[in-house]
Length: 176
Ligand SMILES: Cc1cc2nc3c(=O)[nH]c(=O)nc-3n(C[C@H](O)[C@H](O)[C@H](O)COP(=O)(O)OP(=O)(O)OC[C@H]3O[C@@H](n4cnc5c(N)ncnc54)[C@H](O)[C@@H]3O)c2cc1C
Image (cartoon, rainbow, N blue to C red; front, side):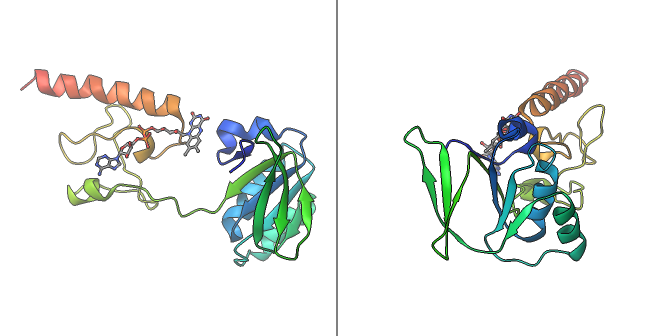
């Protein structure tokens, strides 16, 4: 994948600021991302690669936000020599020029199976619930930190969680 195709709107959203951008995605997940990214650029095309259905309301909002919508499979990402996206080749043979790309297909796997086996309470999206102060789960002496928790997926947040969990783990060990 080209160096200028991104996945995280919070981390990389600024990369598409006022740039001609193609969003490769699927159904409502892609539509949600398109609406989020439309604040960054007025030149945004959402390609629903898997042709999954999209809610009427999202179609309406995309139209209102000036997002172009295409329902076709992407056959190839054409790159510049420096690895930057130059265009996407679609199944009908057409070539869509781009300066930046984003992807949004959803279905990221949350690896909370071990936590679930231990009886840890999971959020509806399979992320692990923790006490906000200590990062301990509902199971005594089981802590969770980072992307496994219920928060935006950011390195700084993961590190902060880890540091706080470590303090409370140390407290628990010291009191035994
Ligand atoms: C493409 C991409 C770009 C990103 N860009 C940014 C960015 O620019 N800025 C930013 O702040 N964040 C970014 N993020 C998010 C950031 O990477 C995460 O928030 C961060 O890595 C979370 O750290 P973590 O330790 O919680 O999880 P991870 O880094 O995912 O580490 C979890 C580790 O646990 C291991 N593991 C999982 N299950 C088990 C098991 N059962 N037994 C043993 N080991 C297991 C995994 O293999 C992995 O090594 C990006 C993420 C992606 C995917």
